[in-house]
Image (cartoon, rainbow, N blue to C red; front, top):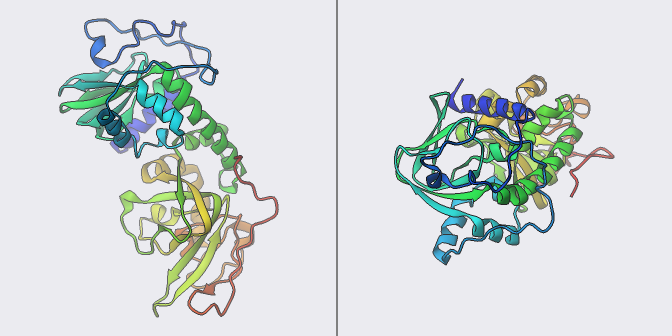
Length: 378
């Protein structure tokens, strides 16, 4: 397995062990200090079975004064971080205000495997290596974050993270992380778990399997006419698997004549993008947002390969059922689309009836959502 996969396996094992709680400790104790303040003192390895009060009302984080320049650096460092993507402006102000800036030197240990979790870290600049049981499994660069699992699941650190260059970090204390980021992420995860349970592709997965997927889903929004994926794209490392939450997407393919034809539409509960990931081939069609904003949950390549293994057989059977350029007669029962759309993989919630030319509109296409098609709670 790859280094990333090894790290992921360790993370999953840690999450599964999180229910085995050790004796409780008091929150706000002396152990809750950022990286440099912990030196010279032995860290506790026991973890607590603390009451999950992350959603309690009235929590006020301890604010640390910052200059506009510091706030701008924090904002830039977390701009692509999914943990911050659903925070509103007030929550962002609280989180940014509570963060503490730390500079560590090359070789300095930031967190240690087996220790109790006290801080969540965002790496603004520099680099760090991740070690599990002494073996290097991953590296972090600017914009990365780590340390959240021990805080989210109340378990020991799953790995050791050591700086490989002088690095600037922003540390967020346990209480602020749990009351704001974790509480927000929990609501999002619960919504995703419910939504995944309503999708035919995921209905046979266990609750734990769906929970693992929900934990790593990232939400993206596309305005009408925006391309989600492009035909012939072969940048495999940057590819993603998409599940439609709200809105509708249209799949288009360019024929040898240069004519662009519509080969399918994907609605809520539909999914696309798996063919290229499974077969490691270029995208066979383009997918664009249709009408109003399209909201999708997506998985990157590593998460797709790690978490959707049990779904691949179903995906492969559907891919094999399609032939290029002809409608799939079994689509209403099993899936949707033409062979081209399996690069996009619409699900059973959006069956294909026919294809329509986008150049002259001479024939109509027919993706219709079945009655009662589920969508996530608002």
